Length: 359
Image (cartoon, rainbow, N blue to C red):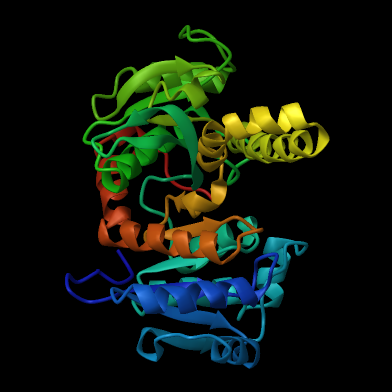
């Protein structure tokens, strides 16, 4: 497998695409500066236009020995067509970042840029894990129940945007990758995995979900818990929830919206009447807990699973805190040797591996 192997005792190197997010390089540079002061186990390569990155970094306090640059004047915007832009901009920052990992000069990629471009860049430069037909974008979602020995208050949802549709075999692969990721990152020795459907019965759902249910029920490598419904996601009934990218993205955006709506309703109620203000004051600790649980910034970024080396996709609106947390997730994924963990898990299931790969 190409790419670097993280050696114990040496800093983990992150190739940080500084150009693609909604806020441009400002928040990425701020995150890098903060991490350089607090994390001696990190090294960050800032990928982007040095004419912008250098002056931004000079405005901040940072540890010079923990930051370096890889200059490129090009990047892919949120509005660009990923495939066309990648052909037109072979030195785009996300491509360069993935190339650094493929060459062994970095251990993982973090980007807040165009999701489609990140997936294509990883496919072109790092390559898919053998047996994985489609990559999956995974995200953590807050839950009522805690999970694993660390008592994490969230579950893993995938795919949330890398695919529009997924076959039964794709869903099985997503389940295997999600289980391997939860095991490595959350130290959960046997995470429970379920398919998202419109009913818990095995025959419920579209043909691909029914087919995936039949296959997963026969796999001892996955702790398959059957189907779950949408209401089970916030309850935290299982550790990993598997679905197609279209549906997963809708669910994820809805959960993000709930957090923002709660915050706005609280502000509006506080401003309206004294009694409401008094009531909100009494409930303030509970409201803070809800807002914190639904705050996507604290979870950092979403791993794009299926590639040989870690790539973490931060939210396009990410500011320094979220980008910094995404870098921490990337370091943890790199140190857990995530690509090889997933490769070994997929290889145990011949029926998945034999399906081959596709672009």
